Image 1 (cartoon, rainbow, N blue to C red):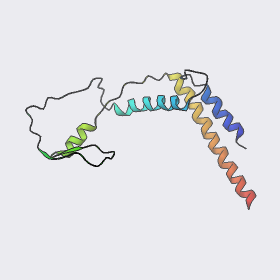
Image 2: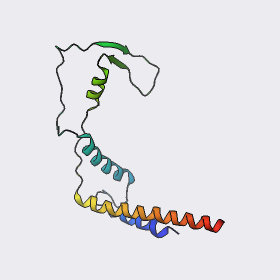
Image 3: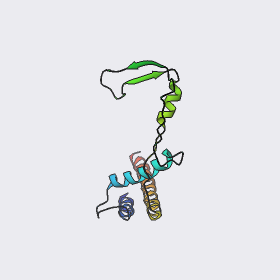
Image 4: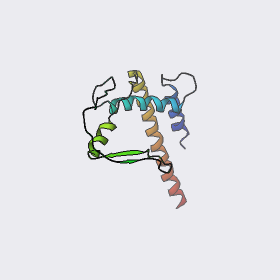
Length: 134
């Protein structure tokens, strides 16, 4: 009942210009969209270079150093008196700019519309199946 909608998603996706081959790749698609999104959201300030500040004359009072912890995802850590400020400053980062041509976004809109139609058709199909089971 959703075969036509599924085919339309496949067709819209295969028309995207970004692909290096004839075979559509969800990984390439995801990478391109994430790269464009990350560049927009991470670059709060228009900085194209890393900033390094010389803190030689600044006294940052360290409170605690934790290392040789049992292996886990969080790394060893320093705790400072002004930890909240340090956390905010170290969270700033930038990403390289990922250029995405305007034509991609026009084509991607068609992909999103076809996915929306597929979801609607799937919901209608499920509703119909529920009615038939009653």
